[in-house]
Image (cartoon, rainbow, N blue to C red; front, side):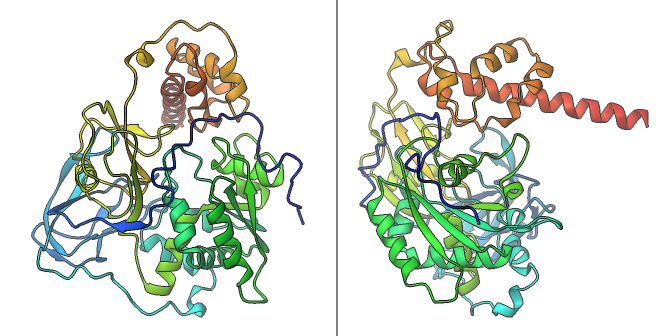
Amino acid sequence: MIELFTGRQGTFRHGVHPAENKDATAALPIERVAFVDEYVLPLSQHIGAPSRPAVRVGEHVDRGQLIARPGGFVSVALHAPVSGTVRAIERRLHPNGKRTDSIVIACDRFASQQDPVSAPVDPTALLSGALATLIQQAGLVGLGGAAFPTHVKLSVPQGKHVRYVLLNGCECEPYLTCDHRIMVERPEVVLRGMQLIMEQVGAVRGVIGIETNKPDAIVAMRQAAAAAPTGTAPIEVVPLRVKYPQGAEKMLIDAIYQREVPSGKLPLDLEMVVQNVGTAAAIADLVDHGMPLIERVVTVSGPGIRRPANLIVPLGTPVRALIEHCGGVDSSTTRVIMGGPMMGMAQKSLDVPVLKGTSGILALMDPAEDAVEQPCIRCGRCLDACPHFLNPQRFSALTRHERGDALAALNVLDCVECASCSFVCPSRIPLVQLIRVGKSLVRAAHAKRQAAEKAAS
């Protein structure tokens, strides 16, 4: 049994300390946003293959009804967030800036829009990995932001074993408080979801990591763990120092167990599985109430938002509707970010929809001088910030020269794009953006080699 490590007060080496900016929403209870007239559901809103439409234009759908099936193993189903009529299946603007195939639903103004609730799943029906299949068909993905299909992590390959389940309650991105509020308001549900995950993968121990800037969440989760039925696998709540990117799964493992996931490997190779607290709550809602993933909690905040809030939002809701619900934005707002300020993506339109991985909508004000890039001064701050001990400055230079081979040799694919390097760079070099381009060069070269080898054979 691996023991918890407390010698470094629950943290990892390197990382950065951006201003938290959570006070505006940390104490605000989750509220429900009003339904709107139209919902846009991109078929691609998670890592992996897009979903495949299962409805036709003009068809009536009920809230929670299947509208798209998984497009492969690394893919999940998609469900109607509201009762209404399928208005179109066409290409619409995606938050990634591209136009992608989407299902458009016109909301039925006269429908009750009640949650799709059913009887709890029979525990015997969840044996032999059946929970993973149920999760895929319910459309669940990681709700921390990456949107990786949940069932893939819970489908343990033959020959592999899982002993430890870690729940990420760090929420280290500035401004975001949706996970915080879920832990405070629904601790029993989070714990129930964690127990289901542990049963699915056969884990013998669970740990919930929460940063110390969320003392009410720590208390709530500890009380829920203490009230767990006897005979269940032990679950411990571990306070962690406030640091970014503490919520990255490899950093969380390092902070709690002082173990490093080797380059090119996964937490599974250390007999561990990491999930988000919001994902755990969604699993409990699915098993106990039959609720597919049709809505999620989103933090709407930032200095440009007139009334910050934590909102329950049906998927497909336009960002514009959330901002209007919160009183609109200040005229000095320069950027609207989907996600957190470190890893989120600036939007060119407010008419893009909320996705399964949308954790926040932030209205920010950036000084104009921050956007002016200067030459690198070789200060080494990006190296000191990188939690994976990579060389962001070297990656950026190689990317500019399109040296994909050298990038691969320096393990550029180990970068998790946390943007710690960009945050500390005094020259305002867009390091993480350049690294993303560099990674695409490596992947393109790999695909080209595979195609050549296939043609030669």
